[in-house]
Length: 184
Image 1 (tube, rainbow, N blue to C red):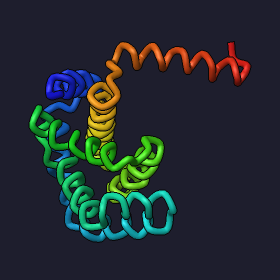
Image 2: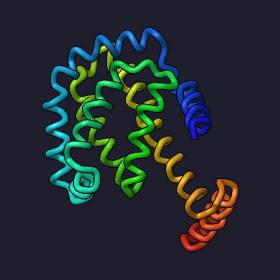
Image 3: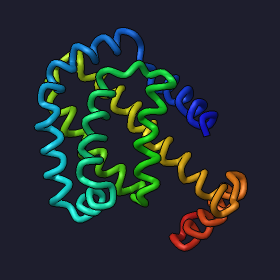
């Protein structure tokens, strides 16, 4: 499992490309956002409670767990080293969501809501906005990586379907879906 996470992190990090200047700007940007962390988390929780899927997420994971994860994630956005330890810490959020049975579309829509709440605190003309966007993108990809590794482990260990078989089943299913939709 650690090998899958390591390879995924390396690929995502090459793609997103957070450099030392970006990391420095993130630490500077933290002064705008992190003093409001508790308020932002409270707004996010309030927003999630108004949404049926969000309320289910809070119920399945537990309110205190979600608050803690959001707070840790926000801090990691600004103070991460973007190394293997940081990647493993962020990917655990994906494991948690997958293990709780949160559907990936629900997860991504809720994380987009969270992302908006964080980014809206950064002035639009700020030199900090681009590094914050990169960091958020990196961490969202790592959360999805953790989710995917958990799902792969489930198929492999519990259902006995390795990744190769899963990909073939996925290809067959995709062909069926495209045929049903009339797409060639």
